[in-house]
Length: 140
Image 1 (spheres, rainbow, N blue to C red):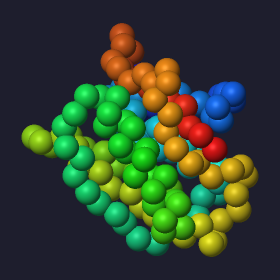
Image 2 (image 1 turned 90 degrees about the horizontal axis):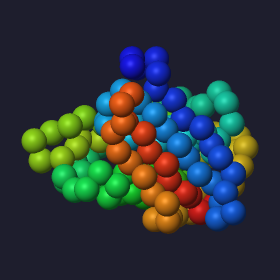
Image 3 (image 1 turned 135 degrees about the horizontal axis):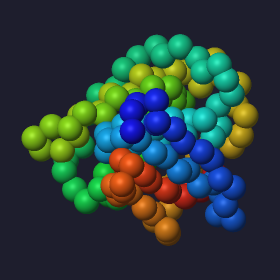
Image 4 (image 1 turned 135 degrees about the vertical axis):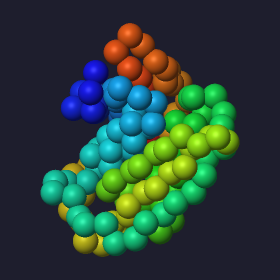
């Protein structure tokens, strides 16, 4: 599996929306889940990023790190009115280092409702024979 095999899809769900993502590595799968979240409500082309936001995410269970990453993206959308149009996730000795390249939502064309919360029901994030995959339900 190569980075060309990194992708996501959006699946309708009775609770809102389900994001499924695949990638050759854990960090790329996390970044692809963020891309799916953004694609769920922003039209293309995505706006240019205006500011970067970086932080360290402490090591935890894989599912918990996925939830915390997506919760931060939703927080940025809800509180600051900006969306992560690109995400970089790198492993560190103590967890993950994350960078969101943020675009102001004032300059975007929404194509769906903004995400409101990450639901824990049927949450999945694990390696398989082809790399890593995740599935998460988002309340919109």
